[in-house]
Length: 257
Image 1 (cartoon, rainbow, N blue to C red):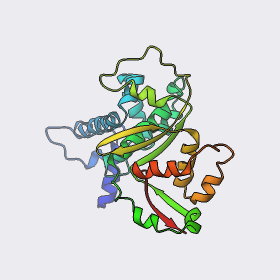
Image 2 (image 1 turned 120 degrees about the horizontal axis):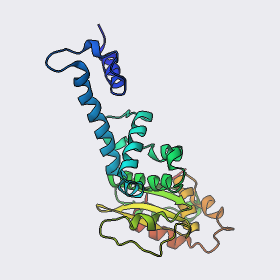
Image 3 (image 1 turned 180 degrees about the vertical axis):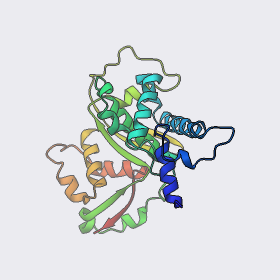
Image 4 (image 1 turned 120 degrees about the vertical axis):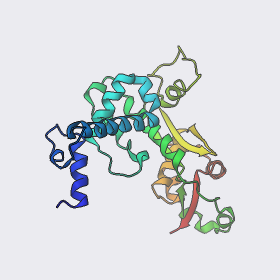
């Protein structure tokens, strides 16, 4: 007798297998043939996978059209079957998948747009951190401040792209008229994707500000991270940077180690 795990693995494989799937002999035959019964689940799996991706990537679907998106979603579902019980995790690898999808090669900005929409999705569903411990930060002695290691909020993401993603995303929001002057070759953008209440905001950052946030997110101490940018971003105001990102809740906590 098959174990529950073995039966589940057979069922999962049968969702993409031909009609002679190993599961079919195990199914009860009555008014509905086993193959037809399995087809119902197969269609549901395709539909659910496609709708999960559509919910996360609405701008991508607008950019490529419903037919192309549906075909790409089905290819993705086969290449990256869900390994999580949470449907919100299903599209995690869609950007990398698009980067290797030959029919999408003529639209090189698609993977980065997918990364932006996934960042928006993650930020929207992320847990809000507790209030930043300003009193504890104020108590840090001046001699130790260079060793501060800040933790970026789980409700924030950083994304840099050579494409004008922010404007392209904005132009595909409901009720926004197309800008005839928009140019895909107008230059890239560095973004902080963050949540304010129930709204996800896309903040465009200057290169130095983005680079410092990236270094802090990677765990570098404040002093070393700031010193490394003095050649490339000498005008970066550290006090203003900290004030902005503490008030915006970009920085969630800190440690001295």
